Length: 589
Image 1 (cartoon, rainbow, N blue to C red):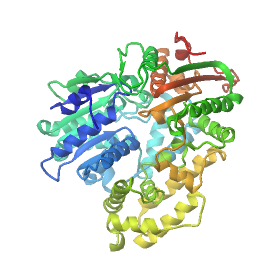
Image 2 (tube, one colour):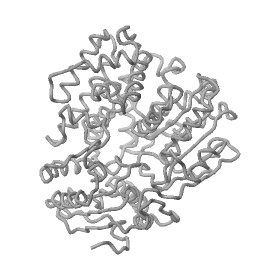
Image 3 (tube, helix red, strand yellow):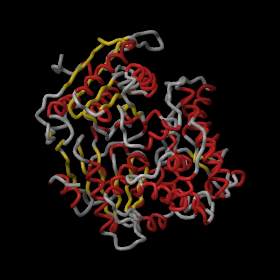
Image 4 (tube, one colour):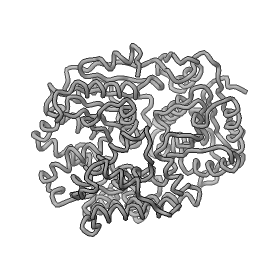
């Protein structure tokens, strides 16, 4: 993991720092090296380096890189802010809060979505009528009118079932720290370094939680933030973009160092110049890739491809890329919505029967990463291999700890260590070829050996039901177009070997030789919710950020497609995304 001067300056800086990292600048490399440095500087085995990421997948990436470097991670905690709030604040200190002390469960997003849509429908609200569940620091209802009533009914429903949604987790964690300074001091005392990835995607309550912790023991905590305001594509979910000065003020710091990574190691200079053209004001970015001077390809099919011919046209691009020697796993096809990706994926398999495809975002299990049964599934869906030895051991250790600490299940001696648990998993078989029946059977075998009675563990039983209900729902909605065999589920945990098919949000942080993006239409980029509920300026801002993220994934070849033939619910034809249509650029023929 060699570092450039820019990268090393960020890693070696002593004190609080905000690193603004342009696309392709090695953000994850820098964050991983800063974590490694923190681990090496620990003075006690009771201390923890904290790495907060926007997704569990990003946390897995950091852990995986450290595993590949044979770096011990026993003193590292990496995960999302929601997982952090649960594991470090709510569960250990539940007796401090009346709403928590008699027990609680975390509601599955699939279930909360169903409740919200049910109440919205009963109150006459449509699918694009926004009802925010993001709470402010005061805990007040963030909505008005009918939406406010829907929010109240939604919260009453969750309370009656002793459920917390993700926004409740943040609010209650903040209230816990605010009302109990000793909790903040205890947590802060064991965290000499707190690293935060994708700082531009942090919500106000997330800032508030971290601020309370740092205020608990300001002199002993170091903050390391990494992000890029130009890639903030979650503002509709409450994300805030703060300047370094605003971050320093939030944490009560005299100041915070602002460093920049402005060198791109991913794309040709031509592609860099193009995606900066989409976001005026980003500043100059220099490509230092070995192939920086190559022309590559930038093509824009503006309403020239009909949706019925989309699969055939994209298949032609894939064939051409493969013929030029591009590995299949270095080709990515993406769109704003996963429903469009699923439909296209099935057609591409027909057009390219000899080509392998990987669609991590289209697995029935993709959105269940916070569920404990997902953690069980990934053990059964991976096989022993040299590359995964350390990772699977860590997964087994984490699962045992969660079962014992969260579900209060004492594992028997035959399964009580990571090595013994892995031995059982590796030797457990099932004759089922379909993924979900396979998982049901191996889960059942594990529960039998572990002596887990689901009737005595309501939370575990609820998570089990939610895990399969969400997976079945995703398969049903896909109308037979979502792969569900065991072998297809295993691909979620493998390094990609085929052409990647995913959503725009799903590839954030990734890079590919060839990027093919379709569905670049007004109403998708940005989505209708932003257009209907926001201002024209907000819609333009969100569209330009999403296009910036899409285009900056490409190393050498970029294909942008705004197809024709799609119609709105009012039977009007979709038009090209306004931001993309207004870009003045000489594309390749």
